[in-house]
Each structure stands twice: as C-alpha cells, then as structure tokens.
View 1 (cartoon, rainbow, N blue to C red):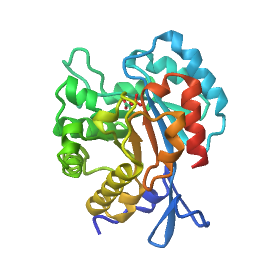
View 2 (tube, rainbow, N blue to C red; view 1 turned 120 degrees about the vertical axis):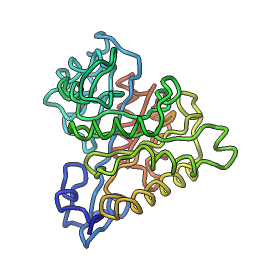
View 3 (cartoon, protein in one colour; view 1 turned 30 degrees about the vertical axis):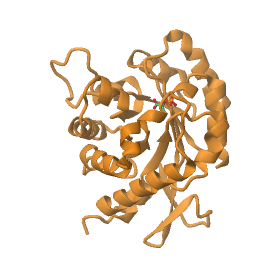
View 4 (cartoon, protein in one colour; view 1 turned 45 degrees about the horizontal axis):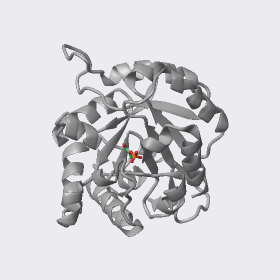
Length: 284
Ligand code: PEP
C-alpha cells in the first residue's frame, strides 16, 4: 500500500486527472484514470539580471495571460521579490536557484527555502551542475535541500546529468541513477518534485545530445521513479530536458517521449527567445 498515491496526488495542480480522452503523448493511465502532466518551461537566469531586466519579464508575462503550460522564471535571489511582484496575477511564477537545507541560522550569505517562499517563490532549482561543481554540492546536500524546500511548500527541480567523460565511458545511466537515488527525497510526489536532465557538456555550449540519447535518459528516469515511488507518483513527476535549448531546436526535443518541458539558461534571458520555446511547448 505504501506506494499507492492518494487521490489528491493524482488531482493536484500539475497532474490533472481527467476523465476525458487525451492523446497518448499527453497522458498516462493509472488505476484506470488518465493522468496529464502539465508541461513546464522553466528559465534559469543564473547570476544574470538587475532591476533593468524586470521590464523584459513583464513583457513576457503580458504575452502569456493564458498559457496552456506552466512558465517559471528563476532570477537571482536579489530580484526574486521584485520579479514576483512583476508577474503577480499573470500565468508566470518565479523560483529560486538554490536554498540552504536549514530553515534559519548562522549561514552567512545563504537563503533558506522559507525565505524563498516569503519572497514569492513557488519552486527552487537544486543540484544544478554549476552548484555541484562551484560549491562541491554532493547528492546528500541536494537531498537535504530538497527536503527543506518540499517542507516549505516549494517544488524542487532537482538536476541530474553526466559529464562528457562519463558519457564517453558509457556511464551515463549509472551516473543518473546514482544522482537520483542520492538527491531525491522519499517524500517526493508529482506535486513537489520535478527532475531536470541536464548533460553538463550541453549546458551553455550549443551542443545537444541526439534525440535518441535524450529519450533514453528520460525513459530511464521515468522507470526509476516508477520503481521507487510506484506507478502513480512515478508517472506524475514532470521531467525537463536542459542544455542549449533554443527556439530552433525546442519543438523536436519536446516531441521526445517523457520530455515534459525544458530548463533553459541562456535563452531564458531574452523574452523573444524564451517565448519561442514556450510557443513550441504549447504546440507539443
Ligand atoms: C542551465 O543552466 O540550466 C541551462 C540549461 O543552460 P543553457 O540553456 O544556457 O544551456
């Protein structure tokens, strides 16, 4: 019984259970109910952006009063509150790029999950490869941060991905499997967890894996989630691809099985580019 999801898991905001016929790409069936994963376009501004970037965000928000996909922008922490105000009452939400595992305390320079919520965030990116590399974050650190984020009511967008060396050594799936076991907390559900597959060698480089390679990893992640959390929860978690997604390659990536959206760095900084990606996701 432990792995059976609650009805509320199936009917949460992100995975609306519907008794209507939807295409097979959009839906999955669990306990006789069709479950739809709402697609998500998430922008990671990294350490870019000052107040001068807010009009760009406002223009994006006004272009999508009624998007059929979720749109999330993760600006630097200094802009989070103002960004939340800028997109208030629009279809766009904002998120953090990291949080500390503790609620508060003597951690100079850090920001807690509760502080992100207080600033208006609905989600937080965790375990991005730049944090794993620059700050030595290990899987267990990411897991502790994700627990804290989920306890605070945030969605944790947990990033996993292999280096070029690991891919060339045919270790990709082992690496992803290890990162998933170590970084994803037991309390995960379709509502509070999003997994982003981001091959390190594709981030900011213009290089993208083949569609078959993306599909192989996404199918693997889905199968691991189903095995660990049961089919209901496993099928309701959204999986994002990240790494040099642009308006020009978005549509073909979104057509790959088990790709429910994208985590976008560089192309999320310009409303025009990010709009091209959102448009492709809405058509997918
Ligand atoms: C990222 O940093 O998460 C990312 C995917 O960057 P880019 O889109 O610039 O490759």
